[in-house]
Image 1 (cartoon, rainbow, N blue to C red):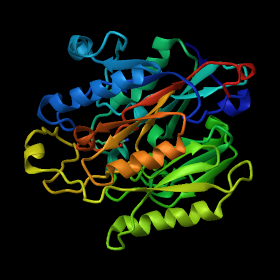
Image 2: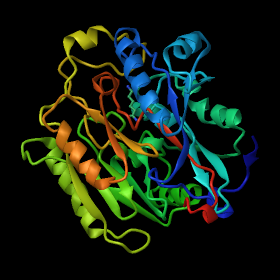
Image 3: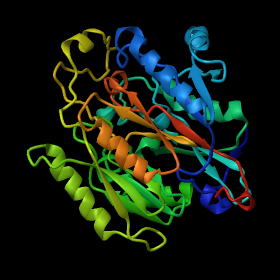
Length: 373
Ligand code: KQY
């Protein structure tokens, strides 16, 4: 692995859309006591279910530290590759590299600076040093060259690319004082354009109510194809999400993408019943000093937008709610060629994120001539 001195934009490397072909997916074995209840028993089961489902379509790399390597190996099916890389938690979307690809199909990775969603301002834990090294260590493991964007702070969950020059972000997250407080909105846009080769950044105002990442875009709005998105939605005017989703819709209705297209919006209802942490779940968590603590009854940022797009499937969180099946229908319409794989994700949302947050795609290194762009 070599470090590139230039930027992806200068070298003709762009971030593909998640719906473009993948060669693999990165996940991280869940062991952090402040995120995964009761020693991660339930989380390990659901991570295994997800890794197994994705590995039908692409190679899954499960990162695990020395202490949990054998446990992960013994639990996961043989086709999942377990890689000995340590981390502070399991949010592969945010701590893994963002892959970029050129016209010849060559891959490189971008390393962002990671500060646990806000550093000393409002970060969620006190020591994120191992998380911050995950992207570089994984690129070393794959022997893929790296653009080091540090000290620019960014998480993979705070961006969605259409692969054709448009990027979705939220103001709530990218302009939060815990990320890059010395950079203006224009300077942040310049960084995104240089490192992801995009021409147009669409700034949604906010994300999902109670999202502890300062409202990552991947919980509220996602590209399903160039020019098409799904947006988390509610018709309940009393729900704080009503106003938040409406503000996002206004922006999407007014904007054009980098290619000048109007954006088609499919609404994806959030769960009808608020998803809240129970006393029993709380009793199964052990927080470290300096870690953000939960309270019983606290509402979690549950959204069906936090799905993973695998090559032939959509791995979709379910909450045991009446809106579970309608979400499956909306996504089947948005992704007609893909199988919808519903996964009951209670043990993940209790950790503070969902299926998109625990996965990071590795684009297929195929050339343009093979029709995979
Ligand atoms: O949603 C994510 N991308 C990460 C959530 C972090 C929660 C930490 N408790």
